[in-house]
Image (cartoon, rainbow, N blue to C red; front, side, top):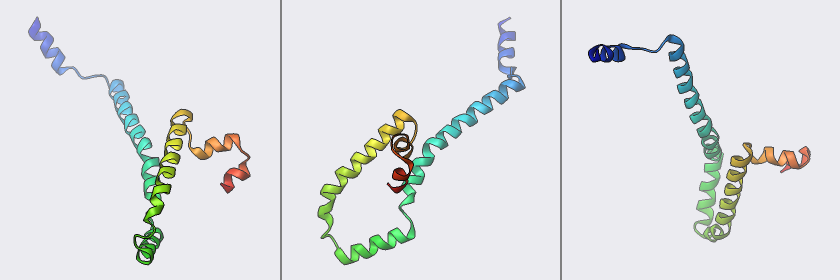
Length: 112
């Protein structure tokens, strides 16, 4: 009797509908992973265009390390705005522009 149960257990395959549901769930998991990665990947790559790299290179050649003091002021401000955007996105499920659009007039949001 136990041998039959083991044989049945090892040879059992779920019905086709079950396989489709499992494949859809796996695909949905992949889509959500890509959705999570998408905005961060796009945002990270958005500033690395050739014109930006050329500008950074020219500024670096012209000023060297003389502008490095601005990091003391700009980095905390950049970190703060990134933290605000991340918290708004987590709470509201939308980005900072969509959140501003709910609160402020559309022309002001477009200008900002």
